[in-house]
Image: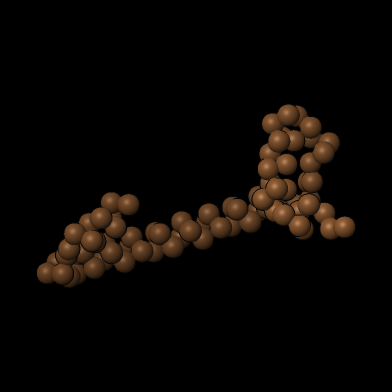
Length: 79
């Protein structure tokens, strides 16, 4: 039978969190836990880079196309 990680990643994550909270470190799936932490870090970095690129593009448009400024740009910039 496949490991919980391979069958239901959500249940696996909840199980790992419970082990961490209860101090049952010997029960942790360290290999997969380390992999998942790396994935989250890379995902956050990509998301940040995407939001930063969008903000820079909007600010450039704001500067060079003042006649096209609109409320939607303002709301996106404030996010």
